[in-house]
Length: 147
Ligand SMILES: [Zn+2]
Ligand SMILES: [Zn+2]
Image 1 (cartoon, helix red, strand yellow):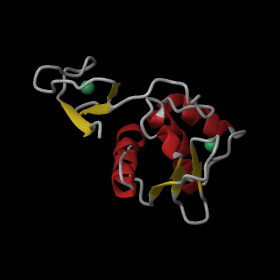
Image 2 (image 1 turned 90 degrees about the vertical axis):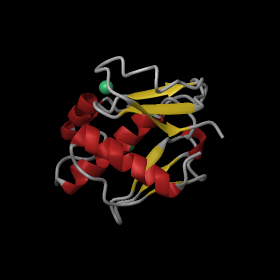
Image 3 (image 1 turned 135 degrees about the vertical axis):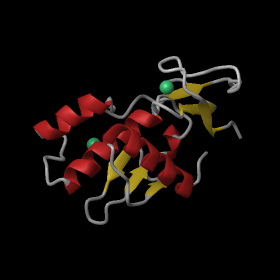
């Protein structure tokens, strides 16, 4: 599992790729989250994530969902679930609409294309010298390895 610092860096990376903006606050794992995958706190700008989803292929989508709340809030746009701005942005970046089911496939390895940012959650290790991004042929970088 990523540390809180690594998680924050990963969220920032996704934020740059999908929103073209930095994530300037902290992301932390919060074991008290039960059914939700994540939560945004407008008070201090931090994000909580459910560690049960740490090894799931849906983690990216959960992060994108929370980043929609985050960026819209600071843009003074509609940042709540029922807001049109939120629904549109969520659709655009491909975030999850609801907390994904925990029965979804568990992943052990996570790779990201260095050029286009596409992520590759995998159950098995990939030879990054041999395999390239299926979309743009860019180089793959390991974000997370099975521990
Ligand atoms: Zn939400
Ligand atoms: Zn690529």
